[in-house]
Length: 116
Length: 116
Image 1 (cartoon, one colour):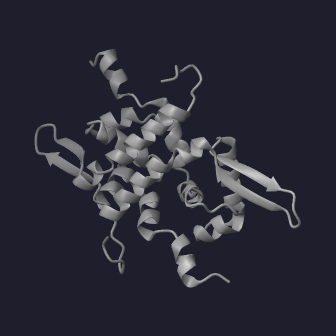
Image 2 (cartoon, chains in turn red, yellow; image 1 turned 45 degrees about the horizontal axis):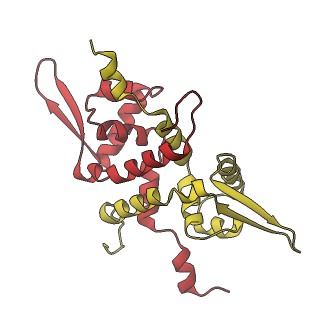
Image 3 (tube, helix red, strand yellow; image 1 turned 135 degrees about the vertical axis):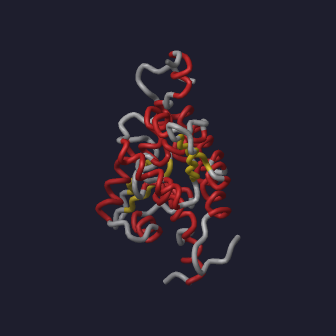
């Protein structure tokens, strides 16, 4: 039988578990990536992420707003302009995505694509 | 109308897209995290990731093996011993998961948990 202290060492960090639940959701990683690249209009994000429907993009943006990762700004112009930006919490995800891109460059092979 | 060069700049890197598709899949991030921590038996991973059924864990491990991220080793003992380990490709994910943990520690609040 393992001691409680030992088991606790192996338990999953609830913060990490929550982060993975938020970031690992389908499309979310690609949407944040678009925003990290400076894309901020709905249609811009939409064309950045092929295969993502407008309905799902809208849903995901609302979730990210609720998580405090994305801020939605409405500019009362004609026609109305809506922009999505990363909050400081969202901007702080850059090292996560940089590390992911670095790994992808090193290890993911795509047919017809030159190695980096 | 945007120039093609400009649009290409905004297109999603196919390597990154593939990486996200692999890593973002439900439970996969938590399973890799368990393996990064040195857990290597099926039951160990299973108890590390509460809520994950044995059927799904087995499926995910097979997918990670097919991706070259996990290696399954069978030791012909009695009873037979099976261990799962990260390959070099899998070990190279450590910076991604470290960055994710760092972000979670800084930004994710869990009720009843002291801030780090």
